[in-house]
Structures are given as C-alpha cells and as structure tokens.
Image (cartoon, rainbow, N blue to C red; front, side):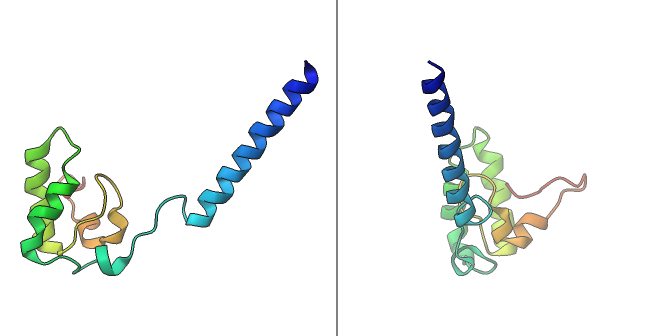
Length: 106
C-alpha cells in the first residue's frame, strides 16, 4: 500500500514538472502572438467591426463591448487576439484609461 502511494505521488510530481517545462518553453506560460498580425497598426479601420465582433463574442455585455472595442480599434488600429486579455500586443489599446483610471478598451 505504501509503495503504491509513493509511486502515485512520484508520478504526480513528474507530471507537474513536465507541465512546468512545457509552459516555460512557450514563454511566460502562454501563447505568443505575432506583433505584425496583432500589433499597432495591424488593422484597417474597415476591419474593426469584424475584429471586435470576434473579440466580444463570448461576453454577456455584447453591446457595450462592441461599442468600446470599435472606438478603441479606430483610435489604435489594433485589436488584441482572443476574447479577453492579451492586451500587451497592442499598447495603445492597453493603456487607454477611463477618467477613473480603469481600462477603457475591452
């Protein structure tokens, strides 16, 4: 019994180490995005509605998300990839704040 328990914990530790090594190999534990495809100036103003439609597709607050995303897209000419986060690829989008200091762009 004790031997099988020790083997179980050793296997659990090995899996944990493997996962850590895989995440470290990807850089910062996440997916890396091509700055030419998602960075500043990567979107033309006519592409904003479709990019924002994709970004806001997973939120329950769709109308305000689309409104602010398109406003930010027209100013910054970029929309971060994915439904949430990843704002680091678009500094203008990330750094535009409300009067209260919160993020303006979704």
